[in-house]
Amino acid sequence: MRIGELAARAGTTTRTLRYYESRGLLPARRAGNGYRAYDESDLRLLRQIRTLQDFGFDLEETRPFVECLRAGHPEGDSCPASLAVYRRKLDELDSLIGQLSGVRDTVARQLARAERARAELAAEAEVPGGPEPGCELGGHSW
Image 1 (cartoon, rainbow, N blue to C red):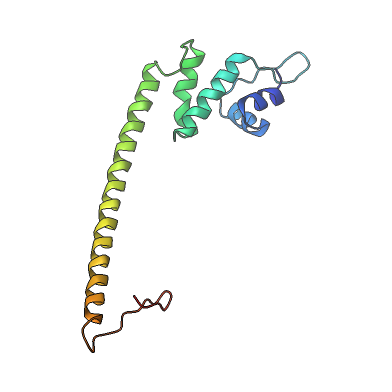
Image 2 (image 1 turned 60 degrees about the horizontal axis):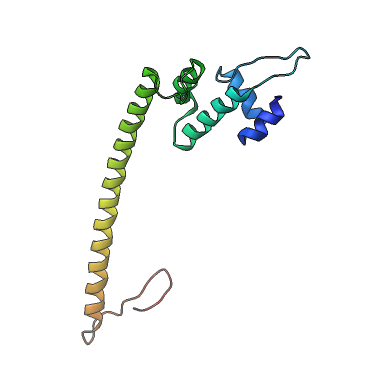
């Protein structure tokens, strides 16, 4: 198949395919007429790259999977280099989850503090002569 057909079937652009070719991820075979020529294995390769990128892998991280597919492994992820990338990505995700959990805890504490402060202001407003609570964002009273 030609580059336009491959791009359409893979759900990408010819520009992307040329970029992958320049990075050595997609083979640069030419037909007798000089046009780029692709087959079903190239489509499978592109689908692997796109799936990994959808999962957050950067383009260079897909290289071991591409090489594994080219070596004849049906899924592209059973080679030692692919497994190593999976392990690194899991470590990275675990770290990000830890960071996000910490941020979430901080936001939860801030919310609890803000709700207590709001309740205290509302209680003071009920005392005769107490301050009139207001919201500077909209000028609304509570």
